[in-house]
Length: 77
Image 1 (cartoon, helix red, strand yellow):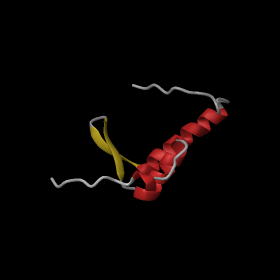
Image 2 (cartoon, helix red, strand yellow):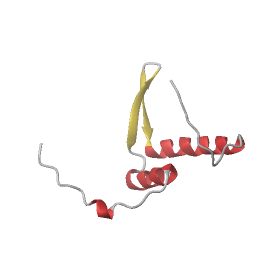
Image 3 (cartoon, one colour):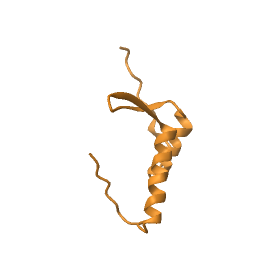
Image 4 (cartoon, helix red, strand yellow):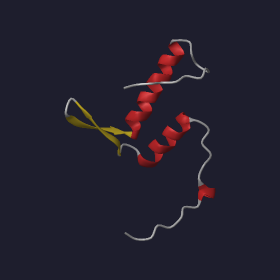
């Protein structure tokens, strides 16, 4: 493998929260695969767009449940 050139982090935009991070990733990489996982023995792919949409859905659910603006921990299997 070749030598990697350090990235100039001074050109990295400030991102204040998860929503901005996901929108920036979507703008940069669009529908390219982000994550591969197995479900019922089948390999599935999640794109950055699908990830952002899922996080948006979770945020909407939190709002409906009246827990917007609170600190929330999400734990799963």
